[in-house]
Amino acid sequence: MRGSPQAPDTVGRMRRRFALALLGLCGLLAGCASTVAGNGQPAANATKPGAASASPKGSGTPDDSGRQTLSCGGSKISPAGSPYCFTMPTGFQDVSSSVTVDASIGKEKYRSAVAVSSRDLIIISVYELRSDTDTISDDTLQGELTQVLRELSQQGFTFDSTTADKTDVDGARSFGYHASQRSTGLESDVYFVFRGRNELQVNCQWKDKESDVNRGCKSVLDTLQFKSVK
Image (cartoon, rainbow, N blue to C red):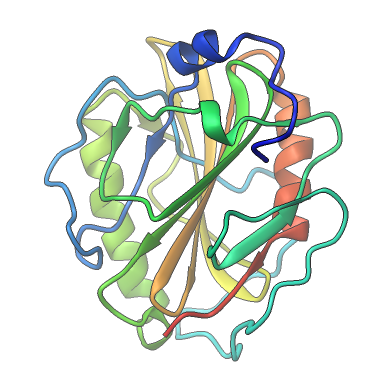
């Protein structure tokens, strides 16, 4: 958190190098931007084999009642007033105050970031949505996400598939994708997690430390708690 040590590089160097394209749902977001601006690095994430422990979801709406309280243990990261918390992965450092984003669709309400190096990091973001997603089917949400991926493909991102890997994260529905960007050599995994009127994204990006980021990503997903906001 703010008092935590910096990542290996200086803060100024981080600001130049931490770059992630954060993805939002234009059809559901309030105040959504019409295009992806900037020179973002891959910020998409797919559920690679073994990347996260989760169970498949069906094609309907969720059956979980939603979390009402947060109780993360260990070295907890949870921005003040945010609806989420998670435990800092071993070997990572909190760089939340040092991260900048080069490209986005929509406006974040909260953001956290942990890193093992300047190009190998995990960013967690929350967006407020217009609608209660608990009443929206998986197919409809995936249709919205497909449009987001289409826009990002025009910005140089290559997705392994536009069909999401559907899982649960803390009992909430999650849709996973994997992206790469040839111009930077970066790889990314992103989980879009829906509960109530919030969309939470876990973006796992690597350049040189794939195994570390995959381990850290799994840890974040395993310890993540996400409150329901109606």
